[in-house]
Structures are given as C-alpha cells and as structure tokens.
Image (cartoon, rainbow, N blue to C red; front, side):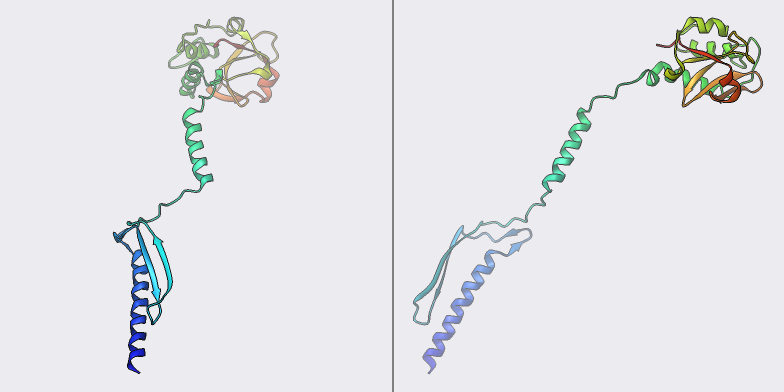
Length: 221
C-alpha cells in the first residue's frame, strides 16, 4: 500500500515543479524578469513515468514592462498640431495692423485729456489740425496746420471703407466747408481735439458729428 502512495507523492512533486517553473518564467524583478533560457520543455508524466503531456515553451530571457502606448488619433493630432504651428504662415498684416498705424494710434491715445488751445500743435495743447499734424509727424507724414488742406492732401475714402488711422473731416454747424478733423480709431469712433473738452474719443454716429460729416482721407499708406 505504501508504493502507490509514494508514486502519488512523486507525481505531485513533479507537477509542482512543472507549475513552479512555468510560474517563475513570468515573474518580473524590478522591471525585468529572471535570466533564463530562451526555450524550455515542460513535461507531465503519470505514475508509471509515461509522458502524458509535453510542450516547448518559448519566451524572452528578460522581461520588460510594457511601454505606455499613445492612441494613434491623439498622437496624430499632437504631431499635426505641432507641425501646423511651426509651419503656419504668418498672418497677413492689414494696413490697420501696420507699425505706422499702430504708432499713430498709440501716440494719439497718449494725448487724451490734453486741452484744446487755438492754433496750438502741442505738446501741452492742441487745436484739431494741430493735433493730427503733431501725431502724424511721428511717422514721417508732414501735414499742414489746416483741416481743409489736410483733406486735400490725402486719398479720399468712402465712409464704408474707413480704416484705422484715416483722417475724418467735419463741418461746423452745417457749414459747407471743412472746419474740423480727427483720426479714425475703428469701431465707429475717432479721436480729436474738441474745442470744449480737449483731446477725446467720440462716436462717429453722435448727432452733431454725424450731421456734419464731410468725408475722409488716407495719408498713411
């Protein structure tokens, strides 16, 4: 009765060793597996040592943690985004975005609040044509100290084609001639030296200026 029991014990030990060997093949150690042969034969026998199962197992001798995969769509989008950003053509700079216009608008805005002074062209005070003459001189455009003559100096611009930096002209309480000038800022507003309030920003559609609008001229090209 002891011999079958001993054979059964041997059988269990063999199975245990086979399972242990298969298990050890897959154990990672600090990110890498055990260094073992590239091929191992696993054999299972019965109590009479007859082979009942046999298989060659192939595996890498070093285990490596799997790399983090980036989804194809995300990777493509990221690459495309970076490429398009690097090779995107510079946006076309309109006249309104040119350095000369930016300088005119900045210099004009810096003078907000300066008082109106008849026949003055700065820097402490201005009349309307003295204000525009002073501001445009900073970009090399020399204008006469007279609103009517400034209108004659530039290229005429229809109201619906106004651009930032254009000169806008007005009459005086219904007069036929030009008596006032300012600089168009965009968004329906202009900056000018008002006789009552000094250098201010006013809406083109305000009742007085809408009724006295005479035209516009472009002196900065």
